[in-house]
Every structure is written in C-alpha cells, then in structure tokens.
Image (tube, rainbow over all chains, first blue to last red; front, side, top):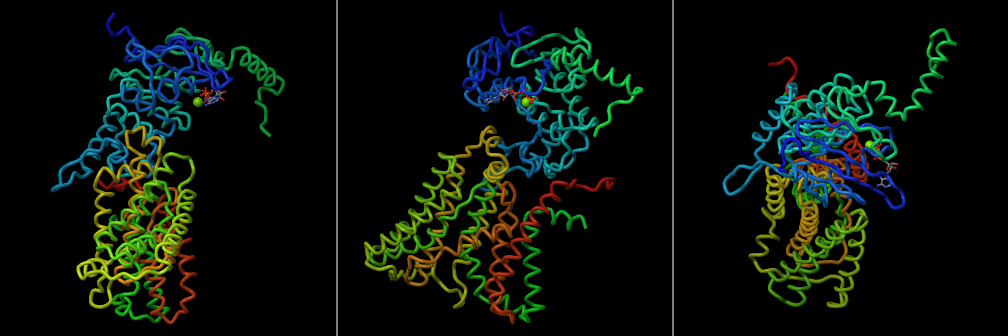
Length: 275
Length: 332
Ligand SMILES: Nc1ncnc2c1ncn2[C@@H]1O[C@H](COP(=O)(O)OP(=O)(O)OP(=O)(O)O)[C@@H](O)[C@H]1O
Ligand SMILES: [Mg+2]
C-alpha cells in the first residue's frame, strides 16, 4: 500500500522506553494522520513528554519502532527529525527571547542578499516573511519584525513558533503543553492556530492537561497512565467527564467528587475554605 | 521622541549615556578642559590597545562564553615577536607570524576544550592563562636567559604597527577602528552574527537549527587569543622590547568595557558599537582622571560604580527592550 491518506504520517509501534532500571513507557501504540490532531492526555509524570522526546529525536526507543509514512525510522538527533518534517514547539515557544522576530524566525536559515563582494543578512526580507507568516495565522497584532520575541505575549510566541515550523515545511507539529502557561484569551489564540495548522493538512500532536483545550481541537485522543496507553478513542466517543475521570485515574476522581459533594452538603453548599 | 525611545532600546545606549555622564562629571567637578581631554592621546592609546581585545572578548560573552587567557596572550604575543625577531634575529615577518600563530593555537586549545568538555570556559581559560604565563616565562628564561628581550623592527613594520601618529597617537588606534568596523559588519550584517546571538540565547536550540555551534565557538576563541597576541606584537614593535609580565590588567579592563558596553553577562544580547563605546568610557575614566583635579585613586571607585550601574542598566534596558512594542498603538 502506498502512502495514502489512510497511512499515518507518524506512528509508534510497540514502543518501550527505560532510563536505566526505570521503565517509563510500556508498549506504546499511537498514530497521527495528515490533517488530524492527536491529543495526548495524562497526569504529571505519565510519560507524555517522554513520548514526544522519542518522536522528536531527543531520545531513542529502548525497543519497538517509530514509523514515518509507514516506514521504520530512527532519529539520531533532533535535527534529523526536524529535517524529516517533524517540528517540536516547546512550552515557551521562541527560545531566543532577546532576538528580533525576523532574526529568530530565520536562525540557521538566514536570507541573504549581495552587497558588493559580501553576502549580507537581508533584514527587510526576513522581517517581511516572518511577519506575514504569523499574520497568515491570524495574529494580526504583530506588524513589526524588529520587535524582540521576548516582548510578545506567550500566545503570540507560540503562534510565531508554529508559524515558523509551518513555514519551514513541517508535516508533523508536536506541541508540548502549549497552553499551560496561558490565560484564557491567549490559549484560545493558540487553539485557533492549531486548527489552522490542521486545516493546512499538518498532523498535530497536542499535549495538554486541560481537557477543554483538548476537546476544542482534538480528533483523536490517547490517555497515558503510568507510561501505558490507558485509552485511545476518537472525537465524540467519550464525554468530558469520562475523559477527566480517565486522566485522574478514574476512581480517584469519583472519590474526590463524592468527598467534595459530601463536604458541600454538610457546609450548606459552601466549598471548603482555603486556609 | 520615537527615535530617542528606539535608541534607548539598543544595547549600546547605556555605554553612550555613561560616556556622556562621565565626561560631564569630569568637566563639571574635575575642572577639566573638554578640548584638552578630547585632544589627549593617552586615553585613546589606552582604549585602542584594550579595544582590540575587548571586541572579541565581548563576542564570546554574547555567545555565552568567557576568555580570560587574553591576560597571558598579550605578553605571549610580544615575547614571541621579540624572541624570534630580536633574540634570534629572524625577519620581523617571522616574529609577527609566530606571535599570531601562537595566539591562534592557544585559541584553538581553548575552543576545543570548551566544546569537548562540560567545563565552563572561565575555568578552561583560567587554566590556559596560568599555563601560558608559565610557558612564556620558562621559554624566555630558557632560550634567552632573561625575562625581557629587545627587538628592532624595520621601518615598514614600525610604520604599520608601531608608529606614533603626530608624535602621540599610536597607530594601533587605526587598527582598532578597522577591527571594530570589520567585526561590526560581520556581527550585525551577516548570518554569522545571527548565529552568535542565537548561540548565546540557547545553544541547544541553535545547534538544532543547524548552526555549527562548535565551529563558531572555536573560531571565536581563536579570534580573541589572536587579537590579544596582535596587541602584544604591536607593543613589542612600538617599544622595541618585550617583557613576560603585564597583561593581567587587560582581563578585568576588557570585561568591564564589554559589560559597560551593554553586553549581557548571560549572553545573547549586545553590540560591537556598544563594546566600542564601553571601551572609550572605561579609557576616559581611567586615563582622563589625570586631567582632572580629582585624585586618580578615585578612578577605581568610579569604575566600580560604573560597572554596577551598567549591570543594573543592562538589566533594565533588556526589560525595556523586551516590552518594546514598536510603533505606538493608534499612531497609524
Ligand atoms: N531522562 C530521564 N531519566 C530518568 N527518568 C526520566 C527521564 N525523563 C523522564 N523520566 C521519568 O519518566 C516519567 C515520565 O516523565 P514525563 O516527563 O514524560 O512525564 P509527563 O507526562 O510529561 O509529565 P508532566 O505532565 O509533568 O510534564 C517520570 O517519572 C520521570 O521522572
Ligand atoms: Mg511533560
């Protein structure tokens, strides 16, 4: 079978990962297709970041395979993964806060123009392309490529990093908790951009703690519990409460809810006071 | 107003403001005549020798590294020139190339050790600083039986590297300006400059973006040690002799000039223009004080205060720059 729409762009098949004696991931099977958002959910320490470190070439699986377009691949380093179109955007987006938008957008791939016998950095072109790339994603407040990245809001920085990845030909976008540090409005910016990336045919792996954010963009969900995929389902197959329960390990959440209800009843409907 | 504001967000703003403040202070409280100060050669000569070293040291700091071995490389450069061309009587070109090659070699060692080990470059270059001091002294005593060696350079070499323009201004001033312009061009107008800033911002991300971070780091160390050897070489040619001692003061002076010039100690931010003005400011304080009624011992206090103010200002400017939103809102 050729790489058609039904072949996942990126897949993990029976992947295990141990750090020394510490087994972190067990038999992980995941797939993501073009134009689809896979949400990776799970509690702290469940292994979400480890999954993306394997997919982005930071670590290598202890056993099992990673497949790109249906063929097994091994990434020697993050550069190898990004050369194959797998782009990872970290929590704080741009990693060069003291550089301008135009300069940081093109780090390592600077546009140049001739100036006499020299090849000089084409600042105008870099700024214009960078500003256009973010604006095309709907962030119209960015209009000056000479601004420092660190002066942008968290959501704008994420957007810039995503726009950059897309500009440089990413096919798979990996976002590790992009909305974690953001307010409601900023987070909604990022979610809009995730949807736009999906519309453009990218495969997106979106890691989050927030079920609401996952449900706003996800087509496909995987819940990790203690390093194993505890649930794998598609949009509409589970309710918000069911997902929240799953993430918290089911019973624990039900117990907590019962406790809170019991407490609320005994306190005339007031929530417990925080000391 | 807008142009003043965008000036303040530039890395060199602090250096230019402190230069103005120090000069004003000397004129108002030191009773110095501005024309005399501007016409004086002493601080310009001092700035030129320091500036040639401060620029590459500053670039290393922007890239997130530190090189203090320059303190040994200045005398090493002079001694190499004097031993080869003075003591052994080889053509001056041999002495000059020997000095520069020694600089490049030590820079290469610093760079390789920095990229191959996880030891901070401050410690590595502290090691090469001490080692080179030992090597230069032993080699000098062993080869020539003395810690001071004479050298006479032919006219052309004197003209290029050891001349006193107008009987007072060292020709190194011209070299300093040439080097500053060349570095400013490379750092601010070519892709290599972008790489240096990216490396200082986040080395791992820079490498993942395809920047040859190791080669750039090594190249920067080679440049700083070679520039230090160049200064030593010029001094040997100018003064017709070389001593194994001296040069240690350059470490402190260069770092202060770079920081006053607006380079962040943590890397990732700064400019060649800033370093240039930081050096001038430092030179005016430490040499210009002789033209004032102020006791010269106060110059260290001024330098200390200036350094602290500069560090605080760098932090403030950095914050202001980060919050700079470009065109004012609503001013379409
Ligand atoms: N390099 C490592 N060496 C040893 N253990 C590691 C390493 N990286 C991760 N772990 C362990 O693997 C487990 C999963 O970590 P991981 O960072 O993947 O969790 P996570 O789901 O991303 O959590 P969070 O929501 O807090 O970000 C943790 O117990 C962690 O201590
Ligand atoms: Mg994590």
